Structure formats: C-alpha cells, structure tokens
Amino acid sequence: MQWVETTGRTVEDAKEAALDQLGIDASEAEFEVIEEPRTGLFGRMRNEARVRARVKPKSPRPKQERRPRRTRSRKDDAPRSGGDSAGADSETTDTDDEGSAEAPATKERPARRRRSSKPRSASTNQEGSAMSDEVVNVDQQADIITEFLEGLLEAVAIPGTVTRNKVDDDTIELAVESDSNELGLLIGPKGQTLTSVHELSRAVLQRRAPGRHDGRVRIDIGGYRRRRQEALARFVTQQAEAVAESGVSRALEAMNAVDRKIVHDTVNEVDGVATISEGVDPDRRVVIVPASE
Image (cartoon, rainbow, N blue to C red; front, top):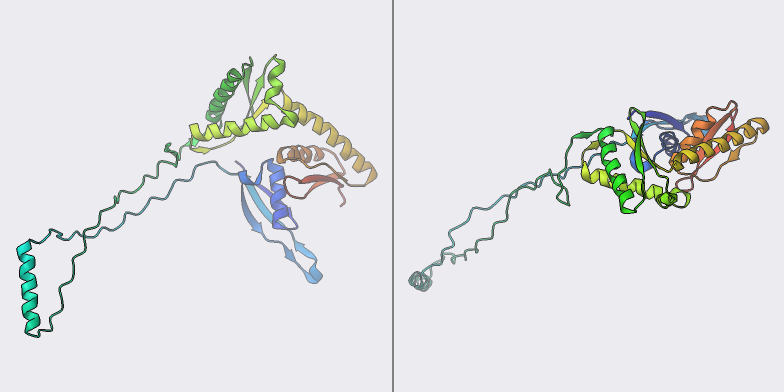
C-alpha cells in the first residue's frame, strides 16, 4: 500500500489525521515519524509534527526458534557391588585408624533425565496451522472471502449472490445482493452486523491464507455501505456550504475511520472550507472550518 504524509500540532494529531485519510483504525496502520513538532520564541509553534502512514501488511509473526540446551555428559552411574562397597568401607576405616588426612569420597549424582533438545519449528503457530511468508494478493483474498460469504448465505437460508467489483489496484469490494427482505439480518442496526461479518471474514482469511496480505477487500451487503456513503456525502456537502457561507465552524457527530474519510474527501470538493479532527476513538469527530482558519 502507498504511504500518506500528514501533519499536526502533535505527533498524535498527525497520526489521527493519517488514520482519517486512510479510513482505517490504529491497529491496522504502520507509522513513521518524519519530524517532531518544534516551538520557537515565547512558545509559538515553529514546525508541526510530520508523520507518514500506510495500511500495515498483514503477515503472521513466526515464533523464534528455541535454542537447544546443552546436555551434560552422562557419567557411569552403575551401582557398585556389595563387595566393593564393603571393601571401600574397610579401606576408609583402615586409613582413619592410621590418622590419614585423605578427604572422604563424594557421592555420585544420579544421572538426570535428558530433555529433548529438538528446536521447535518456526513454521507452525499455536494452533498448529502452517505459517507462510508467501504474499496473498487481493484477488486471492477475494476468492476466500467470497466462498465464506456464499457459505454464510447458505447457512442463514437467504438466497443471494456475491459480486466482485475492483475499486482500484489495491481494493476489491464484494457486494452481497438478494431479493429477500431477510438480507437485513446481515446488516443489523446501523450496520453493526455488517461490521461483524467483515471481522469474521478477516479471521477466516487469516486462517485459510496465513501469509502477507497485500491490498484490501471490502464487503457491502444489500448496498448498505453505498447508500450510507451517498447519504453522508449529501449531508456533509450541505454542512460545508453552510460553513462557507456563514464563516462559522460546525462539528459533526462522532464517526468511525471509514465515515471520517468520506467526510474529508467530500469537504475537499467544496471551496472555502477545510476539515480538522478532534478527540480519540470512539468519540473522534470531524469539524468543518472556514479555509482561512
């Protein structure tokens, strides 16, 4: 994925701006701090913080191989015969009688049980499934998630189809369509079930293809995301035009990273206004401000 570069009064502000631009959560992003913020005379800001970010490549981290332990050489721990023991006792008694300064014999340690020094393979994870550094391209990811969605439709007994739409070189959208009114069960209130379906698909993808995932696969069910995006864009356009006319900033309700990206992209098409983000997730919101601010 390509890097995006953003600035802010602090490093955290710059990171949040990058998340808004990418439309992802912090757990899915990789950051590099290019420049720390600097203040000048009287505490005035000289340079803003500058960071760059991109979607983090998804690849499982292999376990570090365990270093084999050193094994001690085994001593001869065969038991002595009774006669030898008696003879040794007799010799000790004789030397004691003679007043010898010879040190007493030390007891031999019993041989330890050797632990296996075979190193663990780094090619397996905790669940025993094979891990791989192989790159899984976006088309292969879409194949796996399509199979999952078709199985989900069959499991809930909803007739439907899954259509693939290529948004760009790095993004594919899978649209689940059906004439059944029950498709709303997979959307849920405010798209919550749809979000859960998306998370489940990512878990299935990670299990089926544990490599490095390049690109992104989005899921839309019943056109919900498309309608949501169009409605949000119309609302934001109205708010942006009002700010441009009145010169007074307007704060929108808290939104997730995907919706905030729609807001930023929409406002960029309106002259005389700009956007800033405030707060932290899940209460982070976008504020539409006059461009002169």
